[in-house]
Image (cartoon, rainbow, N blue to C red):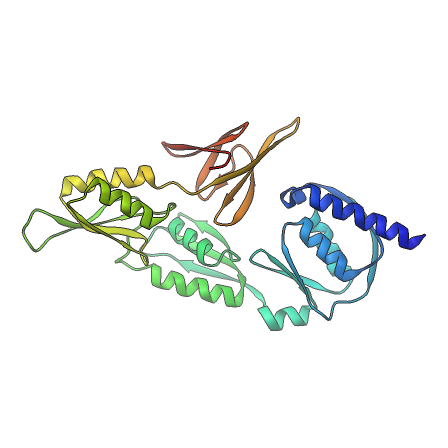
Length: 308
């Protein structure tokens, strides 16, 4: 009887996991386990939270609990702490094991305060999020200070990236053309225009098609389009790149209930659940309607439709 009940409960949870997007795991859920293998419980909780799951072979035992109206994350925290285990998020992967095991493999978590001197602090934050997405960050714009929190090893990577990026020779986050007089005396100047969101090489090809008589190239390190053109042309190139420099958001779904409408948007292999007013990679959600979502950034706006 108990075995049948266990299988039924676990079956219902698995059905729930398969029928509902993991993004909805932020909502309150009810769950009940009775003498369930702890490894299986961690697998299910992780999948409901939308994570890949790795459980250390040393994790063993069974667990019985009933939780009502709690987020999956809270349930995961309660189960790990009451059973003597801990978990660590490494990117989008949930790793479960003993506290000693996790510290030996991934190190401890810490804070780091980085003073940004030569580039825009929000641009530095975007770079950290791109290179080390598992590191959390906070910007103090008034002090040009970037506060980082994460595993010690990840913080070291982030600090090395910022050390190389925060140089006087790099272009700041403002989409302003950097020009330098050409020594050849041919009325052309060297310039650079940053690309923040789109695929740089694709924008480069568009620029080449618009100005076929000029020379341009893509610099992967600085994420800039470099080239030689007339000063007035650089002004038009800046406007052109800015118009094309939109993030590759993909609308995966629109969900609604009586209270609100939500959208599932994929960007760089990460799916986010967005509401009106939310911000994704510096772009704010203006409206969500059937089959489309509108984003804005200052005076810039664009619409993403289902299937884009």
